[in-house]
Image (cartoon, rainbow, N blue to C red):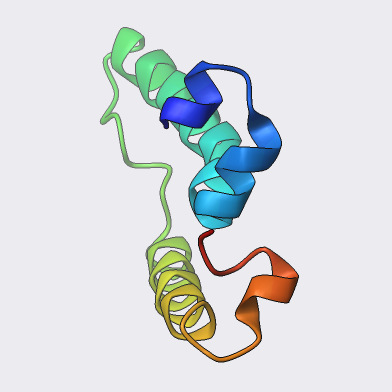
Length: 79
């Protein structure tokens, strides 16, 4: 997060590519939740359970892959 706040996108990717890659989705999801709340609808009703499971699988796979030998060549492992 520190590297992103200082404009060092490549360094932020080196520390945690998943976090940097998910930031646009978190921003869009927050906007969608705010719109739903403004319309007096449940804020998170648009999130499907399959998306939650897919996110969990991606998180677990990323955690496993970044700890394998040779992961540093693919922006998975931290500096």
